[in-house]
Image (cartoon, rainbow, N blue to C red):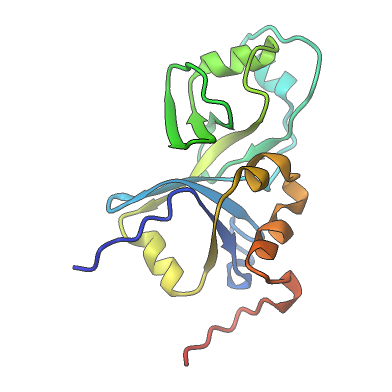
Length: 185
């Protein structure tokens, strides 16, 4: 059996053949990828929901301040929140993906952000993207995704609306030159 090459800490850039799907035009950060499957957050699909809305629903007091974009992290469990953050912190439920990328799903980080005590650099999402064992690998073989190693500038310093173009630029590709036709030499 071929050894799986983990794409943890990589971005998946949707190819044109994913148009008319939930993932059309998306960039997804892979937080986990192993023989059991993969899990990630879409980082460029804003929702029409505000942090105030979320805090009100969860009965969390919030100081006035920055109103970050709330992202559709993926089509799975959209009622669950996830926060991808640069600074580690001590939260109840955190997956340390990389030195500067941590994924927290516990309410304590949301309370800290609402109080102005949370991490400075973060992306907030509802839902996640998930793949069963080998499902993502098959999609990669079908040329559904391009991949590029993630960096903290793309994850935290690039606006969601600019992320697709910026991630492709890391590969030296312009979106205008992408084709849904796959070729094999």
